[in-house]
Length: 160
Image 1 (cartoon, rainbow, N blue to C red):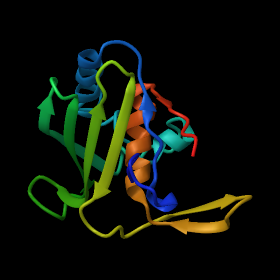
Image 2: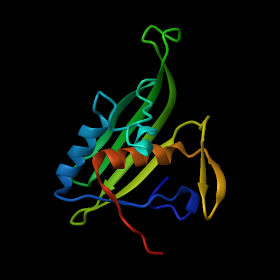
Image 3: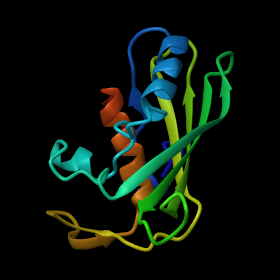
């Protein structure tokens, strides 16, 4: 998903933050790289933490690129299953996502792009007045949205 994509299926609205850009960038890194995994939980954000995947998944995050002068943050987010039979560490990588954020200078707007490195193996059923019953495999949208919710940032309305 991307805030720069014209395709409705893969479009994600940009985010709005308040305050200084450098402070917002530091907050992104602090929240997403939290060792508890609270910053990235693609299931719990939908249910206000009642259905957390943290019991079954371990979240490993790393900062691949960080440039305050351009407002660019690139994070790699890896989910691993907790299973004692898989490896010595008890983990098996289930999905890896690339999350890129571009915070504009002198404008409290965040352009977001999140993509899965592998084809998603699972999906989510949803019901809407427009689409009816739909099955979505777009896990990248859930990852990006869980980060936005953890940061407490708002969605910026886009007028087309």
